[in-house]
Image (cartoon, rainbow, N blue to C red; front, side, top):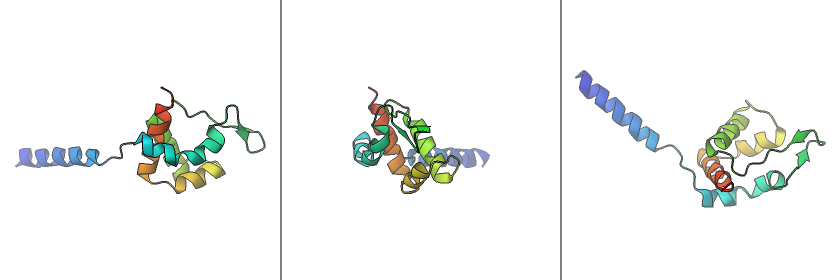
Length: 105
């Protein structure tokens, strides 16, 4: 009985991990148009030139997704980024991460 329970639990874990959002770089390109307004300008600063806007090209997708989630959840604060991230689904974040990661190749 324990074996059956353990096997069922493992099966559920594997099945649930398959449901995690996989990024689609092509979809992410269209979703990143807004991002380009700041992140697509080399050396751009905003908020009365006190905040350096980081370069996203080539950044790991997992990092971008984690950062967007942190902005959405209020763990990171920047007015523009908080609002942008709140409008994104998990799939949007994964797609955007895949796009920017691929831009570094």
